[in-house]
Image (cartoon, rainbow over all chains, first blue to last red; front, side, top):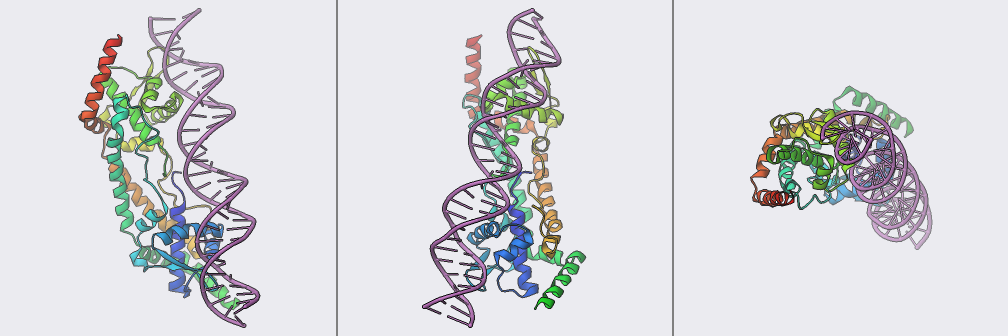
Length: 161
Length: 161
DNA sequence: TCTATATGTAACTATTTTTGTTACGAATTA
DNA sequence: TAATTCGTAACAAAAATAGTTACATATAGA
């Protein structure tokens, strides 16, 4: 593996916020709730929520009844917005620890390879930029798997209340 | 930063092999020579050369006068060939440590996000697949920086012999 | 105002990945 | 046989990521 899992987790987090508001009618979702869905520690979730907050994708509130929710509509949030918010730096290293100054190749290579890398990154941005959280959620909601699982959960919640 | 620097180093290595054969007339280049250009340990270079060998991009020979050289023409080697040879696994994690089975989102998210990631990877492959080592080298050779630096080096080599 | 609930963040540990280094056997040339 | 050169194992060092505990701060509501 190459990159961190923050991107995938961030998408998961935002999907939970979106779906909780759309389907379950929650105004805000707590980091504990999200942590259970992702199956990790709530602090890990809060860390990523912090990055998403800085990027203006979510808002959070402390205290009773607090939690996080989307700062914009799901149509206005692209996967590229999410990626940029949580993955820092380029997809590929354009260089490494100081190539030799004496060698003509070491000297010039970084510009050449850098250009190719920039193109690749632009291509990734275009793909992710064209996919909104809303569309992703829509596709997910329509799967049988999701419908079945959601029904079970809602039924459980009814019983408990 | 996100990924390893192996890709950039591998491109550097192959450029050295190509240019040493084209310009300097070397049949094979030693890992020590490459290591000086990249400015790292020769074992690091041999490790990456091993991956490039497995991918059929270079051939190596032990013993006096040995070293490595390109297994194909530089026109037949694309940046994508190089990337695949040295970077394992996907550019992005499609998932992370087991999301909750009970949560409908954790349950379904991986397929949805996986599709987007596959598209992004395909875009990267296309960009890198369209760039050959030969074209990269050609561009580099034509820079003033390279020409100046190369002349100096060749002059030094004349003096020494 | 007091209490329960949540966040925000620092600090620390553990794990994994990558890189650097030493060492040495095997292959090759002269 | 001697001098090179590779291939690879073994280990150390460094960096990035993820997980955990702890606690100050903010908020809602009794």
